[in-house]
Image 1 (cartoon, helix red, strand yellow):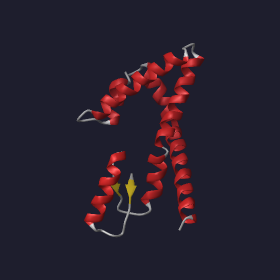
Image 2: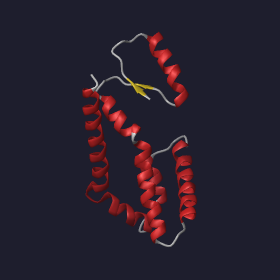
Image 3: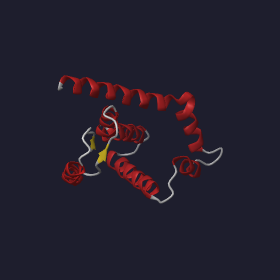
Image 4: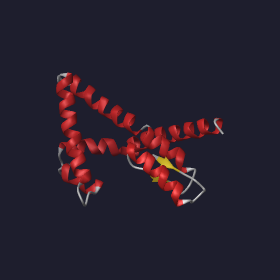
Length: 142
């Protein structure tokens, strides 16, 4: 949960933090403008990951895997990725390089994903649209 307040009363901030820590990580933002991005990125984050996994699931189905089987494979894949992310010296680029053998199949897919930064641009545009929507919604409730 992300919060911003111009008031810097540590007692109040601590009370709010303690209350919301039950739901997970609490972050105090240093700028109110960051709230829209925070809402767009993390509020919708689970849906974005699920959308990508849904695409992967459909690829499994198209290639003859059963629904339950594809879910189990995706779960195993995600668990393996989380183990890597939780490791002490995790680095996205280095981990990707370890998985993508030179001249191999993973490297070939990554070339397509990275071509002209298209995938990054699509994701960025989606988050920008969600941030704008957050700004519009919050302006209506003020």
